[in-house]
Image (cartoon, rainbow, N blue to C red; front, side):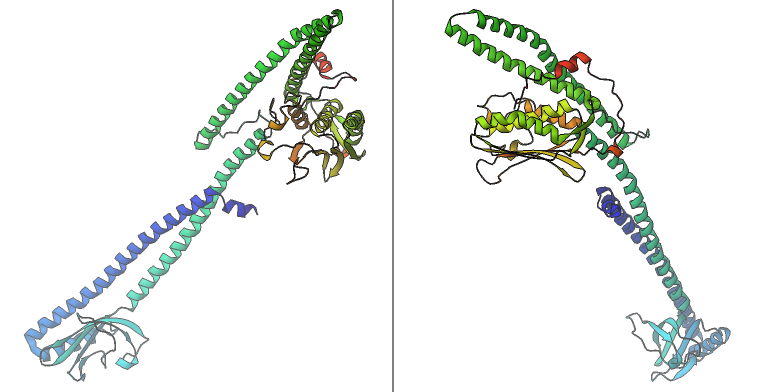
Length: 495
């Protein structure tokens, strides 16, 4: 499977394209060498035959036909291996001289060249061999054939062809191996970048792409990406610091203002003034709830895995939250169902988990109309503990499900309801600390209203697999941690 994935990479395809181009270049080069070599050897053979023909023609002009026959017989006698081939016949192909007994069969070119096989039919006594000759007519009606045994030349050509074929095969094999090795090396570097990128996308912004110190293209890319990440983290920290500072600085004067309004509410006798002061106190409470939620989210994102992690029965915790909110659901005449397994255990911070569970149940009650239905469930799915809340409320459009966990984001249908858009942001921060994955889906797909189902999957607590956690440097001060936990009689749930 890993090999197949390697073959699908763009790097391997590029290496394969390079291999094809390289192999084509090698093939053209070897073909040119073969053409030049074979052509040179064939031309050399033809020149040898032409030279012999020129010598015989000179003898024929000086000594006539008898002298020509005598010269041919002398040459045949001096060449027992019959490397040179001669045959002189009459016009009816009767042999007069030469080391062949019959005229060979073959296709003759316009210039008189013929390629044939030396065998018994033309008086050849040895093993069959290949020959090349030129034929022309001599004055007096005589026919003359002058040729050479080219079997060695043909064998040499075959050797060259075999060497070219083997060379092409070896070239393709080496190119394929080299392409695979290059692709493997490049893919490893890219996979390292992908792994680090996935960790960063999952929230580990401290991760950086490793470099090899070679200062190559990948190192330069990694350096640029790391600098970009540093800049993004710097800007994010700046924005977060500004928002946290604003929330922290305004919370104190808002608290004093609220207390003064409350004192005013208690001291005035005018009903209209009391009503206006009461509305002002309610608005101040809403602003304080927003600032408290902002600070709480900031602290959760800052301390990360430094939460107080202990074994927690998710089923019991959810049952407690349901008991707290069931009365609120009854006031709206909603059908409230719970299917909770108290044996489901996770490792987490009970206070944070209770806050997350309460927020989701409170949201379900808030956004579900009267006589609607709400179902709460806790169960295990493999190695995951699942907490799910399903309602028959207004739901969230698919186009907005990726944005609802952003701070202050509110779905268009819910803007008329009370809230500040921080509830799901808080849920997301708590889920991330507990390595949870949040899934959003329609409770009744295709219907109106579609409702909303929110399921959070967290790792099941296994006592044998419990891992020791090390304290992080950015632990919250005890006072901040104490302020973060709401009083038993006060729960701030915002959506």
